[in-house]
Image: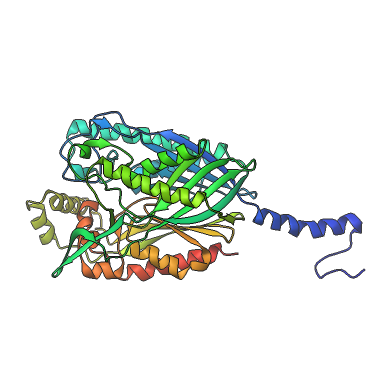
Length: 462
């Protein structure tokens, strides 16, 4: 008998073992991860201040729709784990997430990048501690409620991740894509300025990615779906002070009614410069939710593409450069100004100088690629990511079947492209006041981000 190079004759059983070992490795690589699911109610006690608008001047007194945190855990046959958490909130900061991640590392041995919280970016959920808290100028008693709710949410996140990991079961994945047309670019050009408005000619991403997860018995366990648009359907009036998960939560409700027993999870896309149109009262949020749910149902009712193979995770963090810090004279001047938000930003910088600390020179941004076999690739970015990135990701890495996800891990600020930084406006410039940075970010960040994503893509390819 002539043996292939690398094999030694050890009798019939020995040869069989030598042939079987590569087959076992290939089987593990081609086996989809087990899936675990968990849900926790995170509806706040009232009254509570809501996040997203500095112009709100009172606490919410009513709940229209309960808020949820949901987790989907992936576990490979070889033991690797990754947990996606979908959160009904505006966003989370690094300071808010750090104690949660430290406890998950200590208690569940989850490593760097292995838990990704994706905030829905509803503007009708509570303010969180150390997360744009000062944007709403809370009174002392309001701040106490914010801190109390934040501690409760952090505890819920710990419970949620552990419960999802304990629920892992074999699963079958199917993917499809629909379309919803209510997202509208909000950057309007007036002379030399960029202002808020509806720009029907501006870039948008109307794709609705859908991932259906079944158990081995064929029952649908979860429906993941996404869209690239702000959660800002509600704009003023009495509805401005009502707690809700916005259009994404109403879409979830319709989907779960359509598919009893399944969990519908919304994963926010890269649409930081897109608003729903039209906007106004809660009725508009419900209308957009119905349209989004209809787009998802249309995908579920058609043949979907199988997604096969174990997952692979590549995670990294990059430093996005800011301009040189302002002078002490500029800081003193801003600290004496009439704009309360500019004043607070300057005071924070002055406190750092008084403590002998250096001023910020960059913004830390988390990036991750999670590939399911060779059939689907989640591309996750922290921050409020503008739609240009989603369009580039889909064009550059079309063969990797990308699903762009923003507001992932944490939100340090808006993440604009070079074009938007040059044009100016809210996203690249004035929004940084609320995030506590002197900007804008340098135009080089776009190439820096895309280059790092390319490296992460390469790390996850077979």
